[in-house]
Length: 277
Image (cartoon, rainbow, N blue to C red; front, top):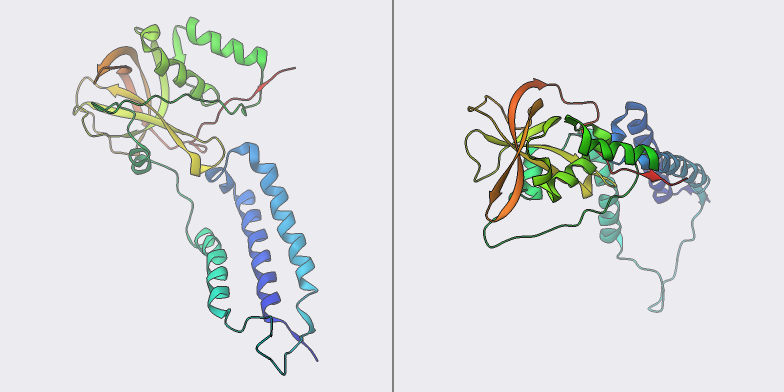
């Protein structure tokens, strides 16, 4: 007897839901809240793969079920897999339910604090080598020109495309930038141990997706206590000076002019891709 196979129907519904979810992210532009733009094509391909699998699954919904009338102790199939299957489906449903029900949020101050302080602590000094996952679509000449401007420009403009590269240079050799002017846009957060007039201005670096997000923060000092709330976005100009905290030399921006701005459409920054031609 031909009947509807419920499990195949459920699988088809899940595949369709995943395809719709990916399409929704791309149509609304929300995909940028989850992954590095370099993976957007792969994400689009994934949505079409889900849709293709959904079409294939449609043909499996109706058919004849093989029913075991007489089961013996030697029967090979399981009769007690209902709980396990429920757990499997619950795990698959979780990202769909949260994805459709909860709006995407931008990583902010609370995540930055949990990711770890940019300030060193006494007795706990770590160094991290930054490996640039070159994916920002620049040729070698353009990248070298922009990197050279970091040493020559009267005003260091922390543009989104070079943010991670400029930040890495300043953190690794802060003395070389002492006395230089700088302009940047970033969100504000506070860390333990900072003075009242000191904040961290930071951007999140997304190498692949938000799961590997890292904080690119710069210590910033104002002349007096500013009225800034965490997660506020500011556009700031100032002068780079050098400070030492627990034996580690760090750049510190002495703010001279700043204003509160709206959060950018794309608040994240990404590593640079140098195309060698």
